[in-house]
Amino acid sequence: MEIDFNLEISQYTKDIWEQILGLEVIPTTEDFSPTEKGTTLAGCVQIMGSWEGSVELLCPAELAKKVASIMFGTNLDETSEDDIKDALGELTNMTGGNIKSLVHDADQECFLSLPAVAVSDIQMHVPGTHEVAKATFKHENHLFAVRMLKKVEKKK
View (cartoon, helix red, strand yellow):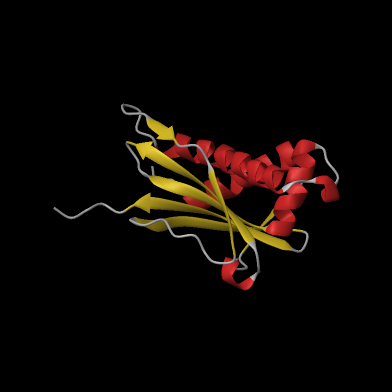
């Protein structure tokens, strides 16, 4: 049976944001491009093993700050840069862990790396991969996206 990764990413993301953060997120067809929206945080975890690739969470800085404030129980003005990065890393890790469960082979396990978080106004690029799924979401007036990238098989 073929897995609809866009649907799975949408469901996992909605569940995590609503259950962990209490934030309603709505899947949307609007495109989120970090280069057009100002400062963006990009969280990334690598999946290694029987399936190789990565999962990225691309989030505007303002929304990432709100997430950190909720996660750590601080006021927005008290939320530090480290808290913001830690919160986005944890959300990326939760999302990646759920997606990893979809792609691992029952006979061969997959492993998840520690999350990495970058702050940038340009799009993240993971060399040697191609996008296999992307879901964009809206919370209030903020767009964010989850991308699933698969390692490109080298031709022999």
